[in-house]
Length: 301
Image (cartoon, rainbow, N blue to C red):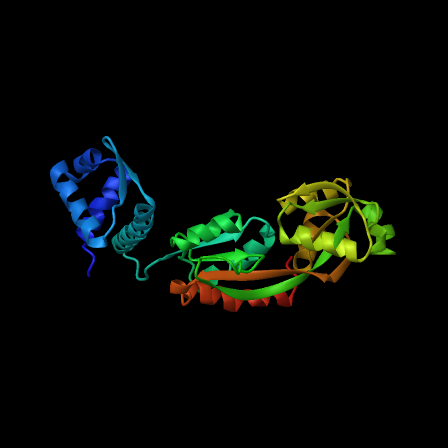
C-alpha cells in the first residue's frame, strides 16, 4: 500500500481549518470533491479520522496520530522550499527535544548548545515539562529526543532507548555569612537548619530526603520549588540552605554569590537522553551523546 499524498494533503487542510466547507474554500475545490477524497484516504488507512458533529470535524485519536505525521511531512516540504528559495546550499533541518522541568537551566544550556557545533543552521525546538507529557509527544513523533534526569520507566508503553549521558553528586550551599560555620561539621551541621527542597515527585527530592534519613539529619524544610533557580534566590537572600548537582557547583557559587558548605557522592543525579526507536540513528542525537559526555569532565561555569 502506497500513501496518496494528495489525499493526505486534503485531510491536512480539513484538520487545519476545522471543517470541509472552510478547507474547500482554501483549496478552491468543491466540498463534495474534498469529502470524497477524505473518504478514499480513510478507506485506504482502514479507519476513520474524524468525529463528525454537524458541520464541525474533530480529530479522533487515530486522526491525531495521522495529523502529527502530516504536519511533519508538509512542514519539511515548506522548509525545503524556503531553503531553495534562499539559495541555501545545505538543508537546514529542525531538531525537537524535550527537557524535563527539574533539570537545571545551566546544564540544559550547556548540553543543548553542542547541537550548534554540528551545524549552526539547525533550528532547535525545546519544550520543557514533565517526563510523562514529553513521552506522550515522543510517542507521536513530535519530539526527536528527551533529556531527562530519570530513565525511561520500565512500564512505559513508549518504544524508545535510554542513552546514559553522565552522573553527578550533590553540593550544598548557603549565604557566605553562615557557610563557614556550617561547613565545619557537614553534613550533621544541616540538622535543624532551614532548607529548600526540590519539588514533589522529583528524583532529587526523593534522594535528598532518603540521604537525610540515612545520616540521621533532619533539616527544617522551609520550602519546595520545582524551579531550582528560585531556591537559589531564596538561599542568596539568606533564608536557608539549598542544594544542586555538583556539576553546576561553580555556576551556582558565581551566579548567586553563594558559598559551598559541602558535597556528597551518596546522592547521585543521573542524566539520560531518550530517543525513539525509529530515530535512534538521528545525527543530532548521536552528536549530542558524543559531545555531552565531555560536560562531566569539568565543572560548568
